[in-house]
Amino acid sequence: MIEAVSPIIECLTSRVCPDCTSVCCINRHSDFDYSDNIFMSALNKEIPEEDPGVAATDPCRFLGRRGCLRERPERPYRCTWFFCSPLLEVIGEQMPLSDHRNFIEMLRKITELRTEMIRNFETVFLKPVPAMKNK
Ligand code: SF4
Image (cartoon, rainbow, N blue to C red; front, side, top):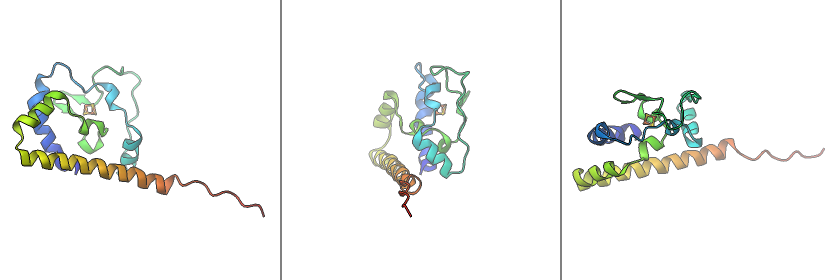
């Protein structure tokens, strides 16, 4: 679903990001959080180590000349669900209403499945250790 939603997001960002004067792809946003770590592990992908040589407010270490260098499923999830005001304006003004509804529904479903994934992970892997019985 993230792959399916990506071309739609790229169509939107291609209209807004090239002229942006306040680029949100700063290095602080490249950190993989708890859910990103679980997701990347499920994909059997390596989680990139943080780069202490890049300051939090510097351009993101994954930002290339033509945008993000990482495939969307391998970016922190915040990079997919965050929409700045200019992007929201483009969505509101230029996306037909039915497409808009489908798009929002896809994002909602991705977030729902992601939440379920975390819950399942915790159920399977973070079970409390049973107490030892005295013989
Ligand atoms: S979309 Fe890519 S370049 Fe932008 S903050 Fe996320 S990881 Fe960095």
